[in-house]
Image (cartoon, rainbow, N blue to C red; front, side, top):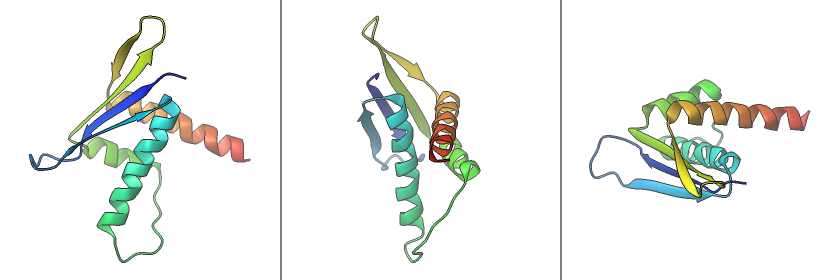
Amino acid sequence: MAHTIILLKLDKDSKTQNIWEQFDSPSAACDGVCQIFERKLKADNPGQRKITYDISDLFGFIDEIQDLACMVLDMETHTYIPHDKKWMKKQVYRHLKEQVAGSE
């Protein structure tokens, strides 16, 4: 498990707060990104009881984030390695695919 930090700014509005969250692993950070997306969906659709989305919606959300970085601790060097949106999308895809395979 490698300590992971996600830093993001949802839009260009300078009044929008920056968000940072820390996780025990990149896998947990993937869950965190999904949860951030789900909170945004709920906020954007307050009257809907059931909201569904697919991977393309999630990737669209990641692409639309003004700024996103993921910092993963390298246990050998004790430094954080930065990763971008493209890396995050690969990790999310892999993580969700593993979850689906594990549930079958």
